Image (cartoon, rainbow, N blue to C red):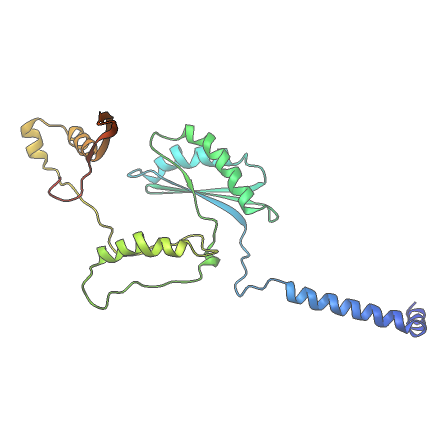
Length: 243
């Protein structure tokens, strides 16, 4: 067999050279078009569902959140494994798909089944899927430092969350900008239970007063001099004095 192949190659040198050139050109094109990655993503096609249930123990989170979600996600087309993890106040559900499954198709299927699972969850609990990225895609990390000393940690965190984060998210191929550290600016109302008991005011009434005070209400239309004016009342809390 090998002898016949050698004799045929000697007798048809032009065809052998032509086939060699074609194979070599195809190899060069394949090398040039092959995508290369310094850190190839070998992880499974997966969608992560995170649900926050503040103040609840892991067993309660498991029974009321993780279990309903995992049992519902078992029916997602193409899912080969569903893993649920219950933490204090948080639930994580990982849905793993077949390797050839398109990630965005998998995310759309999970969103459809989340609408069904949401009816089985406690009131006020809203699950959300994670970003379409993995830990391998973590390509850049930076620190926001104020060398002038004129800004505290809360101001640096506000600058990051309200300016730099949105600028970075607008860049091509950026899926998520995760902020770590700093201090988020917030207002806290410290309740004195003794004074509330003396005045006969329940805690729910205080919470309702704060919620209703921080809102905006629209009214009707006032016509003056052939012009219409919208009437609205703005009552947002913006400083400690407002509280």
